[in-house]
Every structure is written in C-alpha cells, then in structure tokens.
Length: 302
Image 1 (cartoon, one colour):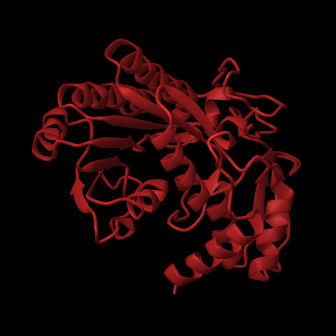
Image 2 (cartoon, one colour; image 1 turned 120 degrees about the vertical axis):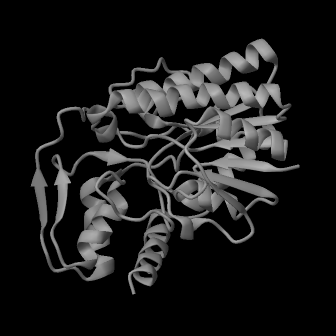
C-alpha cells in the first residue's frame, strides 16, 4: 500500500512524509532538499516531466495514494516563465492523474493555492468564483479542474487542498520563498526586513504541522471536495516583521519598498468552516509557530 508524495523533498511534502508509512518521495531537487526527506521514505530524484520514468514508478510501486505537492512554485517565477509554469503545474498534474487512473490508485490528493482566489478583501470561501491574477494561480486552478474532471468522469477518489501561507521548519530561505523564511534570514543576519507594500497587508499564516493535519483529515474524510487549509486569522505583514525582529533581537529597522507589479492582493484570509466541519482545529498559534521556526533555522545555520 505505497504512498507517492511528489515534491516530497520540499517544505510541506517532507513534513507530510514524516507522518506516513511506506512512502516514496519523488523530487527533482530544483526547490526541495535531499536532507528534508526522512530516512523512512524511499527517495527518487526525478523530473516529473519525464513521462516514461514516472510511469515506471507507477508500474513498480502500484501506489495506493498519491499526494501531488510538486509545483513550479511562486508567483514571481510564474510571471518570469509562464511556459514552465504551465508545463509543470498543468501538464504534469494531468499526466499523474492519467497514470493514477491507469494503475488503480485509490486516492489522489492535489495541493492547490489560495492564489486561485485573486484579490478579495473578504474571507475566502471555497464556493467563491476563482479569479487568479498570475500564471501560478492560473496553472494551480487548471490542476484543480483536471482533478475534478477525473473525479466526475472516472469516479476517482480525489481531494483538493488550497494552502494559505504555510510556514515552519523545512522551508529554507531563498529568492522565491515565502515571507517568513525571508524575514528570518534577514533578521538572523542583522539586516533590515524589507516589506513590499505598506505593511498593512494581511495574510493567513498557517503552521506546517496544522497544514499536514488538515491535509490528512481532508484526504481521509472527503471525496471530490475542495478545502481551504488555513488558520482562519489575519496577521499584518508589519506585525509579522516586528515579531520576527523581536524573536531574533534584530536591531535593524523595517524598510518599505513598492509592491511588485503583479501583486494586487492586500488581504488574504481563509474561511475554514468547511474544514472545521470535519473536526479540524489549528493546534499551533502563530507566535508558537514562529518560535519553532526560529529555533529550526538557527539549528540548520550552525
């Protein structure tokens, strides 16, 4: 009863891999790191765009469940290279669904993004019409549509989870990474934290253990459904920066720079009522999550 996790050397995928048995992690290490993969998992370094190589894995392992977390990640990267974004987030997702159908996969779980909603100043509920504003959001929504098609047409057991600003151990800083590791990287180096915008922008920051809990719960208790995975709370970017400066005793001031051209989203908050109806409750506060992330980043930087 093998489990395939694509992108399992990445941030969320590696944390998910630690919670499951008989896991095969497939990752090309373009963003993920080999050291993230738990020793209990079988690791295969492979680009998912190689259809023959991927099909050979489905033949060899006869996966029971697929968690598809691999992606061409980040809005900025998708603006810079929308063709790559489509190839990885669109075509690879379709190919995996085809192999899942062909080789009798029981459950297919697809990781989507809050970016599919676009710019809204209200809590985002799953029933809202999507309005993605970047190639990344468009391609993640395309993946959702393919997943829904395979559920409706073939009767495949599927679940879609839309992640909202997940953070925590396992996410290394980098030019295309999320704001939390970027802020910690600057703060731990005594550098100013740069906010793109006014700082009044808000996000729904979700600790990675809670995101994994939600993913496993939704996968177990639903079929053909879409779930927001968030904390259900809004935190301003300015408050986040102040919290990280305080944790790291960073004396440098906060700096403000203009928003990126594609970034029109001032506020993002998940309505998690649907997930709560399954029994989900976030277990880690933002403050505790930031402290755990701080301690982990210090440990990998020493």
